[in-house]
Image (cartoon, rainbow, N blue to C red; front, side, top):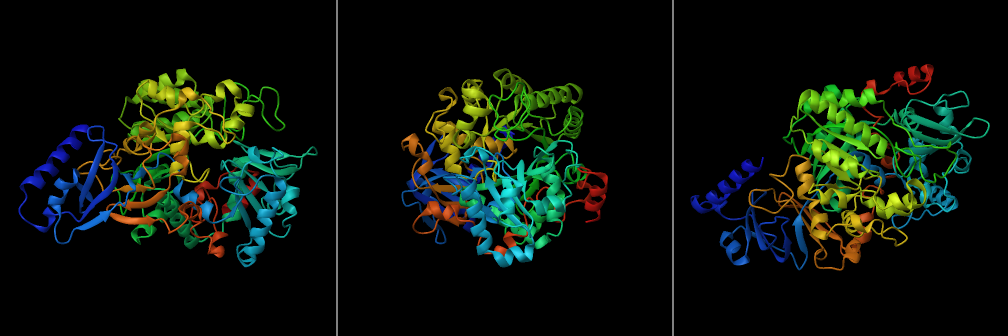
Length: 620
């Protein structure tokens, strides 16, 4: 890879020096007028950039770059704003991310207004009243983003509390982690969850004292309940979902996004909308390896088709650390809720399933990205990767650990030995750092969640992600959290795990580009690479690190074309405005369709529940 990259750059220089006098000799666009941070250690800053045919022709001093100015060259004035390479999404869910734009916002401050059960009900009630026609047409009420860790009561809402909103329409509100939800009585009745319903494998139906479901559904109990709710979603709504997510990514400076747990149907929808010119960014999709192997095998490619490609396989081992469903290697510190003594979470899949999936990826040379939050889940992944490498060798597939919230230091050592790329989640230090300190792992181990310091101590690269829709795909919040590790309460969680701004920027650009096998084309401003850029309101390397979260994305540029420009005035409010909230009918017609629902393969409808319900769902 490295040598190919060098040869290509030499070829570009040779072209510039030796080509005949044609129009291509001149730049289509010259960018100058503000700091340019290249994320290239051999040329860290520049005054100007010349671009032709969507790729970078030259980087350097303005006087030299102007020699490439022709009659048709556009001079793009940065106007004091700071240019960087476009951000590369280390892990997120572009399609599922459309959820943030198309449902009731139940997030807590600073991203929403929900602070307790009462305000949650009020926000949901107001949204329903404002979208009554859409609710009636869709026949379901959907909310997203509540977090029991941020509610004054420190608990989940219940079936009875959602019944206060409606007993006519089914209601489902999704936890911010995406691993739990709460349903009202109508929805529980729809999916036939009652006292006699057993917990599905890999999930939990929480219950009242008398055994009746209390509304809270964990993991596969939640996923399975969505199938009949979303079975009537049409392809038009699903397509709008994909567009909304990709536009939201662009608003935060991402020129490459990831759809980190796809189905064949969701990828085909992305391809369709991209062909119509409605997906403004590149998207790398990773279908679920437990559900879409045939599709993965037929579609994996390093080449984009209209900006969409399948990068490999997604495997999910456990759940949410803040929701106490991640698999630990020891009991949770002080879990909130009714848990047995010594409760340590659980895996969503068996070790046999993990090993079989990893072996299949290694045997075929496919990249595998794996969701593993707890230490126990990471142990399962490390064991499976080690066994696969022993049997099949190293195919150069750059396996990726997703999240790794509670990694032990010995696990980081073993990942280095196995060549695992850690895609970490430092935003957790802000959103849930206090919760981790007080409830999940305790004050000592909380300092080492998302251990970027341990990774860098070993000279390893890492990616820093947002996992949207778990959080907004807010690039500046990621940057701030990776550098400062400041919690909502103002505590610094693990000062030894902090990294400097330049390192944090690499974790959003060149290193995730390497993660995706795209370091030759993306991640830094160098000759020959794509003209993917982001313009920030100020220079992140020059401001007080404690103000990084106040920086704003002003312009996003994909291959020399502006795909997002902040509105005049309050860019902060503009970037968080839901792109499709003005279309309430569409808003109610899709939720979580990335996993199940409209157009998804019928094979996904598996027996999570009782046999008779499985048969009913399969007919739908």
